[in-house]
Length: 57
Image (cartoon, rainbow, N blue to C red; front, side, top):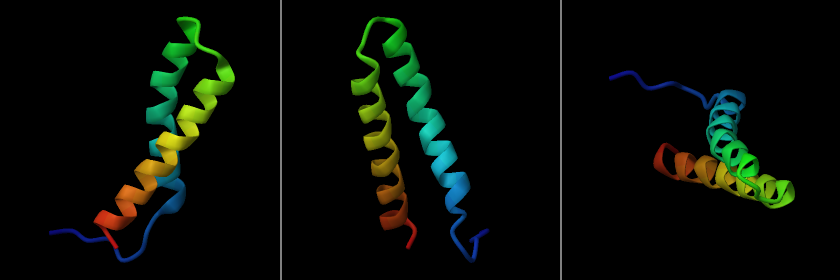
């Protein structure tokens, strides 16, 4: 099975941020406060990176 030798942080951050940002953009379009949405996006991105790191040390 393929195992990368080092973590590709920029790709991981971009993937997690884009995934969270899509859902957050929809929420803003439905009337949610943009600052709350940004906070949710940042939290979701950090949580995804922490979980990924714990899962694949």
